[in-house]
Image 1 (cartoon, helix red, strand yellow):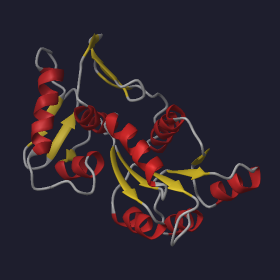
Image 2 (cartoon, helix red, strand yellow):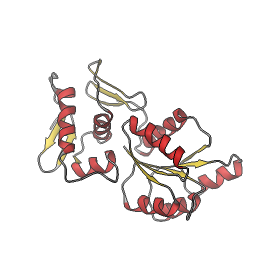
Image 3 (cartoon, rainbow, N blue to C red):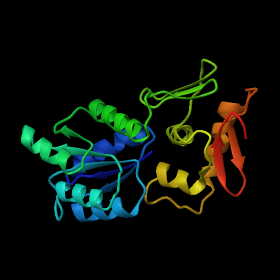
Image 4 (tube, rainbow, N blue to C red):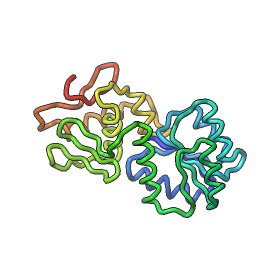
Length: 224
């Protein structure tokens, strides 16, 4: 999953980015509202973390402009303002949720997962197909009840495939949602990661779940 973090407090931004990347998220950062708004309007993200108080363009304005352009990416607003009125202003501008600074990282993580799950209309946090189960919050993966260990990036690729179960997911889509803005899209790293996931998930299973559609992309399905 790919996140845009728009936050001018660089120390806080770096701490949040480090935590999210350790869990397999791809994170782009912007330190002012102008750059943040540009990235939000030009790149594909699964969620935006948006500070209210920013240089050049404030978070409320960014949120309103994104919604005016019918950009429906979930927005989690960061605010140092604790009054009810100020929180309502943030939500009324189009934000989906807010969290008040200072915050605990675990709370931020939980809100991120809840917003992504809600945006994809998933009632349960557990992603399943056949006997394969992935828990994005606990970062667990099992098949037939047996634990499987994936690297953070492998976990993110598999999570994306599961969120689009029975659908074809192109290499471009995987790159846009799992790697950050600086990724070299000409490399074959996506194929390498999918091959590694397939070895761990399908190698000893009777039913193969991960399928390659040559020249198109990949699909996770009980049937080809």
